[in-house]
Image (tube, rainbow, N blue to C red; front, side, top):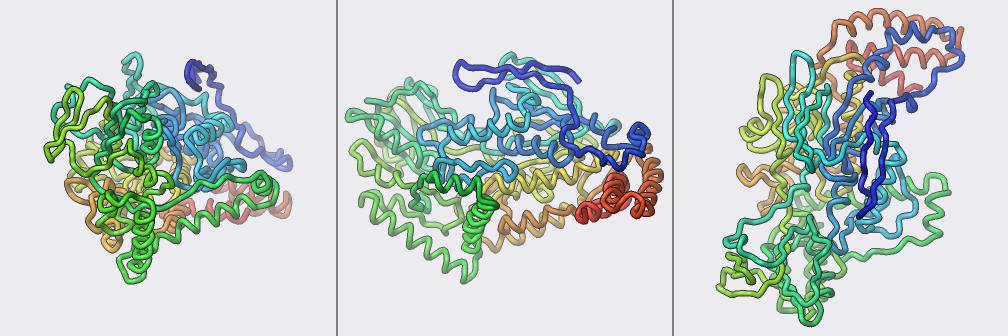
Length: 606
C-alpha cells in the first residue's frame, strides 16, 4: 500500500501531518489457541477474508455518515482498506462547514452521537458547533480514521466497469485543480444533501457593493456593528443567528429579515448537564445506554402526530395550541400574523428556539413578508416598492436538497446515467434509501426516503451504515464480485414508501424542501418511526439481491463445506466454542450459496 503524508487543518493556521500506515488486522479476533492444529498458512489459501481485504472502498464525504462508515468497516468487517475523499480540509461535514453565530444542534446531544462512541461529558443538552466538531474529530482520532482521509478532493464522476467489476472514479483537487482517477470495487456516497447552499436569483444581485454570503459559508471576518444587515430567509439557521446579529449591530445598526413562510415554533431551553449526572453516565452500568433509549423514545413518540387520522389530528392540535400560545406570549403584536403558520404541524420540520421571538422586540430588528425583487448597489427593493438600505446581505435560504449527488455524474451498468433514471421516475429513489438497481456496489448514506422529520440523523445513518456493511460482507469477505438490488425489489419497496407517505402529514401540501419541485414527490422522508427502519435493516432480504461470484470463490465453497462438516464432527474433541468458531469462519464462505442466513445463525448462537 502507498504511504501518504496528509496535511490536516485543525484550526486557523494549525496543521498536523498524518502518515497512512500499512493496513493491519487489529480488529479481527485472534484464532483460539486450541485451534493451533489448523495450519494457518494452508487455511489462508481458502481465507476469502484475507484475500478480499485488498478490495478498496472509496467513501465520498468525511462528515457524520462518512466517518461512521469508515469506523464500522473496521469494527464489523475488520476491513481497513478504504479511503475517505473529503472536499474540505477537515472531517465533520456540517459541523466543520457551518460556523455562524449560535450554530447548534436541535437533537439532544446524548442521542446525537454514535452508539459505538458514547460521550458522557456533553456540556449541554443541545451543544454548539465547536463541541460537536470536537466530538467527531475525536472519533476520527480514536478509530485511526485520519490516515485514511484525502482532503480537498471533490468527486466529479463515477463509471461502472462491468467487465472488471470496478468503479472508475474521477476527482478534482479543490486547491490545485488537478484531475485524478481512482479505481475501486466499492463506492459509498456520504455527501448528504445539506452541503450545496441555495441562493435565490434576484435581479441586480451582481451590482451589490456590500458584503454578501450564505449562512452555511459564514464570513468569519464579517463585522456587523453599525451596519444595515438584510437577512433573507427564516429557517433553523436564521432562527439561531438572527438574535446574535441583533445584539451585534449596535444602536446605529439594523437587521431587516425578509421571510417567505412561518414555522411551528417550539420553545426550548438548553439545560446544562451537572457533574454528578456526567459521573453517573460514565460509571453506572448501562446508565448512558438507558438515557439514550429514553431520549430516543421521546423523539419517536412524536411520529404519531404525523398520521392523517383522528389521533394524529388531536396531537397536532396540541402542537398548534402550544405554538400559538408561545407566539402570543413572546412575540410583538405587530409580527404575530407573520409568525403564525397556516399549514399542518409536521408538514415541515419544527423549529426550536428560546431567543428568536424575544429578539423581535429590539428596535434594531424588523421582520417583513415583503419579498425582495431587486438588489441595488446599497439597497434592496421589495415587491411593495419599498427600498431598504443594505450594507450586507446574508442568505439563510437553505440548500439545493433535490439535486441529489450533484455535481457527480454517475453511470452504472450499460452506461445508464443515475440522474437520468431518477428524472424519468420523478425524483431520487433507492431501495431502503441505500442502494439503486443498475448500480452495483454503490451505497448512498442519507439517501432518498431514508431521512427523518423528528429524529436523530445519526441514528438512521448508523442503521444505513450497518445495513451496508451486511450487504458488503459477501463482496469484501466472501469472494463475490458485486451485489445489486433487483428492480422488482426496489419497485416493491418504493411502492410501499410512497403509498404510506400519502397518509402522512409530510405530503399535506406545504412548500417543503422534502418535496421534488417538479413531480411533487416526497424524496426525503421515511414513512415510519425510526425504530421500524432499524428493524427492517437488521437482516437483509437476500432474495432481493443479485450476487455476482467469481469462479474461484465457487470452487472454495466446496472445500469449505467439508471444513464445516469437520467442525461439527469435532465438537466433542476440541470443545463446542472452538467448533462454533471454526464453523463461523467456514459459514462466511458458504454465505453466497445459502443467502448468508447460515452464517448469521451461527453468529447469533455464539
